[in-house]
Length: 226
Length: 265
Image 1 (cartoon, chains in turn orange, brown):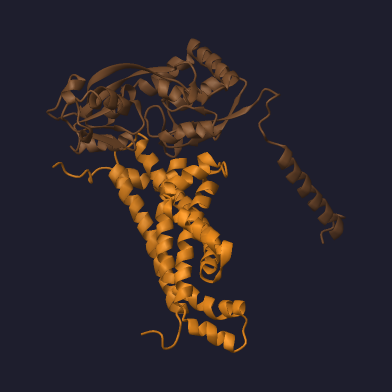
Image 2: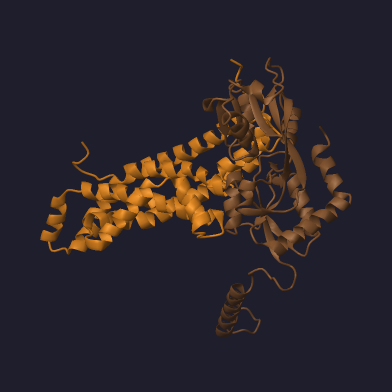
């Protein structure tokens, strides 16, 4: 077996770090925008699935099933080439990732909302709160705290899935990396892949640690911590 | 308040009015001229196909890039810019009007011709069979590839050659064919010994042979022609590109560009 070509082209990678950092910036912006869109749609969707009824609940559930069951690549291509929602690759990728993330996040929040003991809702009603107020003031604050671990997963998934936007030519991290070794100036394909992976790792590690901190800080005080 | 004589109210109404004017202009502007003879077009390509198109230091460069820009310069159209896609996304991008012309070393063939139109050919190429430089495998015809693991890039004419000349006639087992997202990975796999040959357009093969420990074992004559891809029915634009192309070919530009991009091998 021939040796891995590890000895060669790290200088090329170092020389192009500035380009990789620009790609990293696009990746971070795309992740942030998609997670935000996913939260704005996914949190209400999760609440509707738990507390809603009738056609609205069915519509939300169906949309979720369809989005979760469709490969992200297909969603991106449909939105860009089929529906042409935007001529901007960044906007299209944000919508695609955001919709898919909303479908995932709705389930994170559904689980978190359902994990809050029903007795709390009854107790809140018993002290005179309306149903909506009881949900908003008693259930949601606890559910949000409990959704942090699931949300960490979702963040990590969205961050790495931004690389699929390569198919519509968006210049995110992996695209930049690929363009570097395909430019004919270098044989550093493996070195570039390793560097790109390291950057993804640093991004996910830093964010997950931050979310750990948030989780600790806002964790529900009292007897439930067994 | 500054002493420029505007009251707060005047100031606000001026700024507000300007903003409305600007945003209205934004609505009515754009939409690509048409009558004044300076229609803007957007070109699309797929980097990773040296020397035809690739990224160097973040810049899109290559023979196709220079040639299309020279050709468009000879027409009444102006080139608004380049969009980059994966090769297999180029035709959908063209038909959906994300781009107006494809310059990506695209071979004119019947299958693609059903969906899009092509300009006159601007480059001819054959398929080259690339092997390891210091390997003991040196095929001289396609039949020598039987039973060997070989590779090509998805959606390219190299892949078509493997399919139509080797797999369909039964000379190569389907499982011996490896399909790659791009040629760089195919050549990487060749260097690492996972496959024994790569089928690839000849000028691209020459670039690889110049840069890596690989060599062209033989070429398979396909007489392929590269053309710029244009939308079906975009006849006026196609004609303009064809006229531009012949002007560029008649002058010294075409020769200069081939020397620049293919000369150093």
